[in-house]
Amino acid sequence: METQSHGGAVHDFNMANYTNTDPLPRDQTPSFRLHEPTQMLSYIDPITGREIEDLSGHPYIVDGNITMYFESEETRQAYLDTPIDHPFHLVDNPTDEGYDEG
Image 1: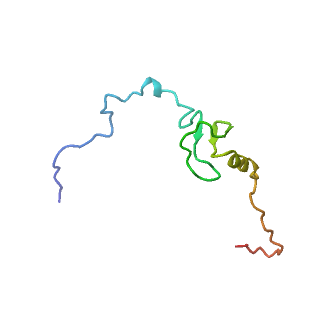
Image 2 (image 1 turned 45 degrees about the vertical axis):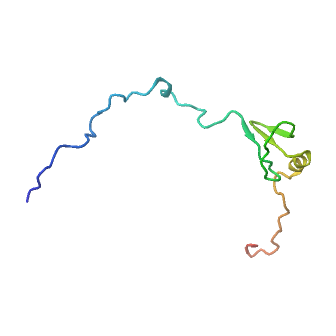
C-alpha cells in the first residue's frame, strides 16, 4: 500500500535558506572576557548576612576584583580574624577501621 504525500517539505535543512547567515563583525572573534566582571561589589555583610543600604562610611575590604562592605569595624575585624583553612577544629578518628564520624 502506497502512502500519498500531502504537500511539500516544510523546511529544507540541506540548504541555507536564510539571508543573514554571516556573523556580525563583532562576533567573528571570540570574547575572552565573556561573563567576567571587571569589579564585583558585595553589599551584604559576610558576618551578619544583612544588606547594607548606604555604603558611604562603612568599612570595606578590596581583595582582587571584589569589594566587600561591612556593617561595622567589628564585623570587618571578625572577617579578617576568621582562619582561612578550617574555621573549626576537626575531630580525628583514632581507630584505623575506616569508620566515618557522622
